[in-house]
Image (cartoon, rainbow, N blue to C red):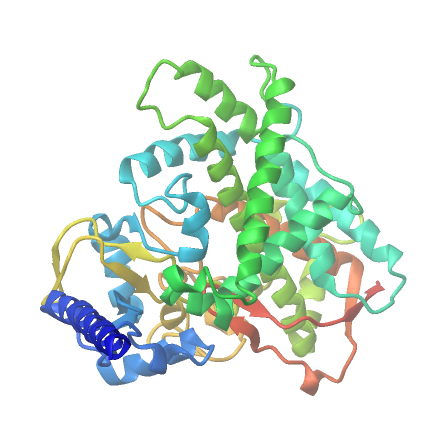
Length: 494
C-alpha cells in the first residue's frame, strides 16, 4: 500500500511538472509567430524528427508563412524564410538579431568564448575587430595570402598527379589543401600531406560537422540536457571537438615558446602579443581561452567551408560536362598552361566566376543560416519576440528563392550571367550570411575557391567512376550544413 501511494505521488508530481513546464512555455509564447502546436517537453519533434530538418522547415513555411515558430524541445525558435525577411534579420534590423543563437553541440565546448559562437556582443566586437585586421595581414612578412594559396594549389596538383588516374575520393585531397592554407595563416606554417597530425585534424573536423548535421546531431540540438547522457553517434562530437581544442591549445603553446614579438608570423602570434599588452586589464577579452576558442572556430569554419564547396563543385562539373568544357575553354584562353592563376584573372573570366557563384548557391552550405538571438524584446512583423529568443534565418530559402533566381532549383551558371555573358550581381547571393556578423573569412574563401578550382581544371580533366545519370548530387545529410555524399573520381592530366 505504501509503495502504491509513493508511486501515485511520484506520478502526480511528474504530471504537475510536465503541466507546469508546458504552461510556462505556452504562456511565454504570447504573440510569437504562428507555428505547429508543440507537445509538452518534446516540442515539435514529431514534425522535425525525421532526419531532414531543412526540408521539414521549408515544408512548414508553406503552411505558416515566411516567419513562424517551432519548438526544439522546450525552446521556441523563430524561423525566417525568403530573401526580404532574412535580409531584415541580417541587415536591415541586424542589431536586433546580433547575438549568436544556440548550437548546443558547439556551445558545450566553447562555453560562450571565442569569436564565432559567443552571444556576448562586446566580446564578439573586440575579437572580430582584432581578427579582421590580423587576418588581412597574414601572410604578412615574406609572402601574402594569394602567394600561399597559389603554392598550396600547386602542392595539391602534385599530389593529384601521384594518383596516376586511379579512383580516389577528392575530399581527402581538397581538405588537406584547405587545411594548409588556414594552418599557414593561423599558425605560420603548413603541414606535409601525409602528416599524421594533419590527417587527424581533418578527420575530427569533417566527422564532427557531419554528425552535428545528421539526425543524431539534430536530436542533440533539441534535447541537449538529455542527449548528452544517451549513447549514440552524437557522443563522438564531444570527443572530436575536445581533441581539436587540445590540438589548438598545444599549437598555441608551441607558438608562444618560439614567439618573436618583433616579427609575428601568424594569427596566433599576433593574439599572443595582444594578450601581453593587455595583461593588466582584468576585463580584457585577449586571454588564452579566447585565443584557443577563436583560433579553432576560424580554423574549423575556414577549412570546412572551402573543402566542402570544392568537393561539391567537382561533383557538379562531372554531372554537367558542358559546363566543364566551357570552363576549360575560358581557362585556356585567359591563363593558358604556363603560369598559376591569379586572383585578378577573375575579372576576365565571367563564366568561371559565375560557376563558382552558382556552386555556392546550389550547394547551400549553411541551409539554416548562422543561428541568431534577439538582443532585446522586439516587435517584428507584428509579433512580439522576447530577448534571447533563437532565430533561424534560413539561407536555403534565400539561395533558392524563385523571385531572386531564374533557375532556383537547378545548377545553372546563367543565374549569375547577363545577356552579354558578363557576371551579374545578385543581392540575394548570401551563401555565408550577411550584415555585421557575416563570415569573417568570406573574402579568403572566395580567393581559395577561385585559385584552387582553376588550378585543378588547368591541369586535369575530371572522370566519374559511374555514368553521369547515376551521380547523386543530393546531400548526404542536411542540417547545420549540407554534406555531400562521398564519391570517387579520376583526375586525368590534360
